[in-house]
Length: 169
Image: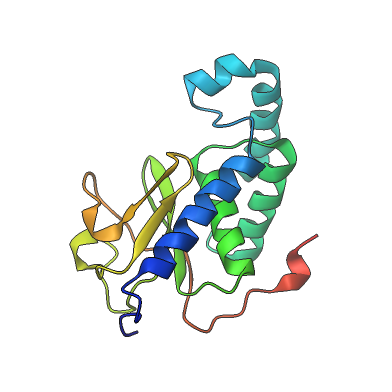
């Protein structure tokens, strides 16, 4: 994939939209965030119970869509659920390439990357790719990620990959 003519500004805009959309669809917040838990304890306990049914990141589109729909139904989730909702938002709007990427304690969405980039090395991402991290309510360039070990994308939609609409309620 070649660099977009806008230098990645459109990817940045979509990443910001995905974060805003997710935060609005999950108004009860983050089940593992003390501030959100204090604000709405009964709702979050119920939501966490429901989400335990989907307590793994999966490598298939249907599970990501299901996780996104369940999370929107209970209006909360952890980073995996936030990433699923953001990914679903971007995929439904035709954004490609996108991926959910994870490390042992966090998950986020990557938008606009080169198929030759090494997902274990954030510095290999092009300047025009972005992270949408709805759980942290942040958008940032992928090549600025630092920290613990990174893994291959959990789920990835390439440049022309279809996103089956029949899975949406």
